[in-house]
Image 1 (cartoon, rainbow, N blue to C red):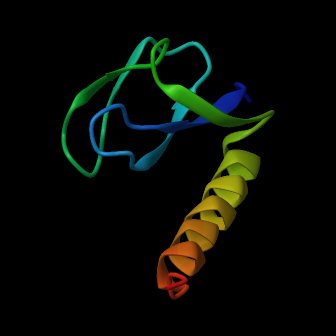
Image 2: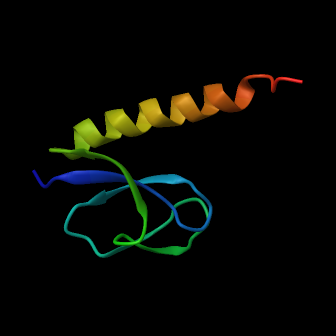
Image 3: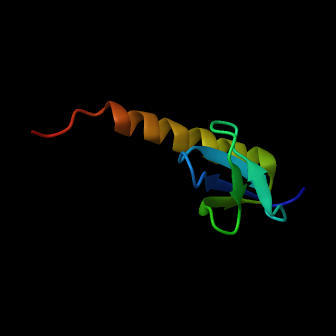
Length: 72
């Protein structure tokens, strides 16, 4: 299996998966064409299955952080 990376969309900040060898990817959230060399890499995995697991954890963390009340 090809190594897979977890990236952040340069337009909307959404998280997406891509093969390490890909050059561009269409964001599933905002439909922007993302240049993978310019996108922020959050994680790397040896397989798509492992990368998918990492992606789920990162999304859960983001959701939990957005629910926390801000200090006043």
